[in-house]
Length: 193
Image (cartoon, rainbow, N blue to C red; front, side):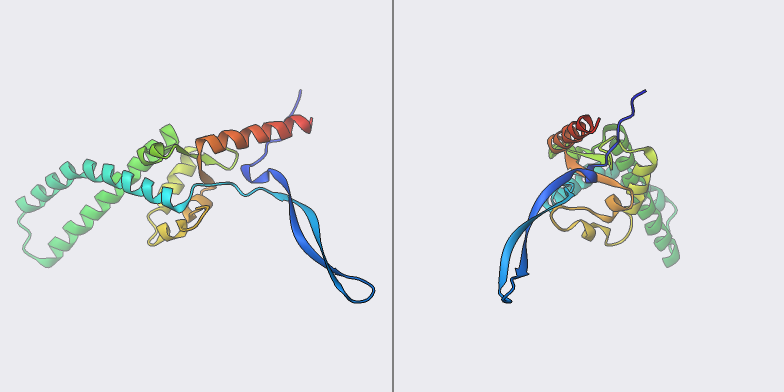
């Protein structure tokens, strides 16, 4: 029976160069280039693409919510709330409903297709740390972490790796980049046999 070493996307080795300095016997500083082995950084999508995903998915979620919100408002008006606490409860219910529908949207699309419609536009997919389809647990964790206030700010930067990615151990990566990384891992595994 033959076993293959399973590598994470973050365990692809590469050789890099860095400048080093060494003093000679006279105390004069000399610069030289040193090669060292490290791991490649997983090339996740950038912040602009995250914004594109967010706006596309938000537009779709809003379109899904319009009939629900209209029905909900009609339902609330039929009770004729007169007290402030009744109006506050109605607003809280509306926000909970929004969170539930948007969470269901993300869970469905990311688990079923590995991408939401917003990610499909940029040809990006959600993968686990090995480049495979994430488990339902990972997707639920990822979706719930999105509800943390100010969490979207953690996606700023290039490459963009938000808290909902880090804590659920997932990556959002371009399909073609993922394919090339998986080919590289396969080559490494074949050479290590």
